[in-house]
Image 1: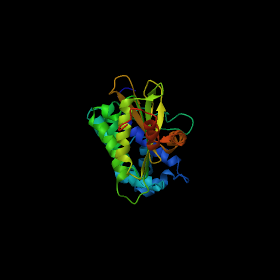
Image 2: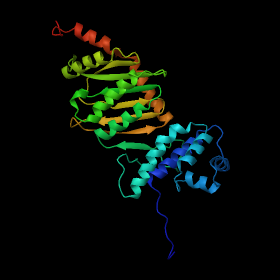
Image 3: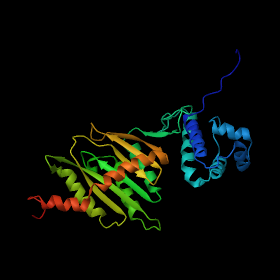
Image 4: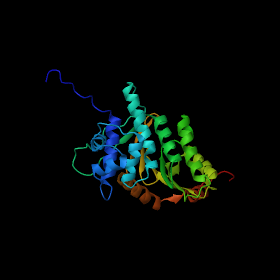
Length: 296
């Protein structure tokens, strides 16, 4: 109609955050009504509806009350809220967010239960910075893989070096938590012989980590002339997937924070882990079969 103004489309980060709140509500055993949320949040039912539909971004107090009403610890949602708030502010200024979210993997109107929001990392630095930040916040368990044609020491970004330090530092921290780090290392082989550069790095990595009781590494003999799909699984909810290949420094990926999504990758990781040799055992076997081993 003439003179009628169209409301601007809410920012993607606001819509994604609303989707996460709706998913949290779905996973609650006794799904609170909007009236119940309104009483808990100290606002009107229309405000709750606008938040859940993505038309309004909640302040932290409303978010914490909503999450608590769903039986979840609000502190676990603080970083999500801060990140969404930053993205909304940047979008309002016309600045693209460096950690812009992808469109929903499943649209809100789609059939089925899946409704996931992914965070896209466009390069080596963005991926490793985000993975390091989440690893530092881990509560109990980190599972990671490294299956590439070159050792970590041959990548130049400070972010990638910091990521590897972060994992070891987290495992070695004095803590009352029952911490555990498991890393699968893919060592390239050609005609049954391991790659020399990766083998040298694996030896040094073993020396750097063998005293850390909460850290374990096992070896996957990797015969493909290409990088594998690498992942970092943090606690029981966050999956980071990395894609690399072509130019040595090229890497990008995404992360998804969803317990169900996590279970598929955790099962795959555990299946691999059960079939692999511990790093120390592998190195002993390789050195025992070499005539040019150090000190030989």
